[in-house]
Amino acid sequence: MTERLYGGKLADERRAQRRAQLVAAGFELLGNTGSSTTVRAVCAEAGLTSRYFYESFANLDELLVAVFDEVMARTIERATAAIGATDGSLEDTVAALAAAFVAITLDDPKAMRIGFVEAWGSETLMRRRVQTLHSCARLVASLVAAQLQLPDARRAGLDVTAFVIMGGLLESVLGWLDGSLAVDRDTLIREYTAAAVAALRQATTGP
Image (cartoon, rainbow, N blue to C red; front, side, top):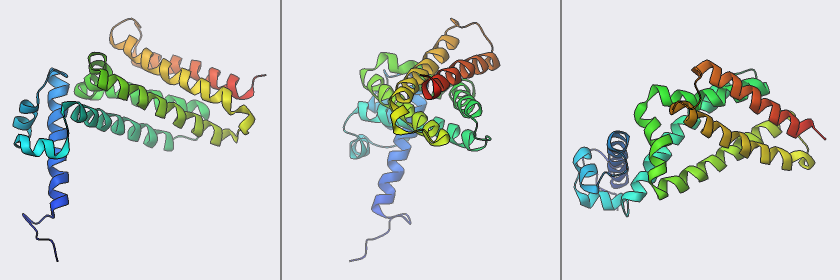
């Protein structure tokens, strides 16, 4: 039996569209008012009833994670594109990664608040941020290992260092945002890149 179209779309397409509307609404509210927002407020912003909210999400925490994932996906996509546009050197790869994370704090204040501020007040978002940070660290380790054709015997040091530099990037950006690091944007990226590259070189070539 052929599924009927409604508004020119199949049921799965309509559900996906409603979910996207809810995520977009969550982005606006979380970026403006923080994790204190409510299901009712999200539905009002999306122009949907609560029935459709619970069609896509079991609770507000699930929506918050979906919004956070969307912000991180944009950031990683931006970083991946920037890395792909470099000459492939270790320095340019790290600088592109750092620039992408710094740019999100300048180009989109809502994304910055969701990615770097709101997680502190939400256990759910904090867990997700930790998971995302670990995923990014593993991605960095894989990129560097492939670039340097690193043997498996050297991977342990690289893996640890990748976690260190990703945690350092997050803390550097947070320190820059709250004024603890009184440097300009270019200096932040330049000095972070120098420190991260030195650590990666030590991990991949040191004794």
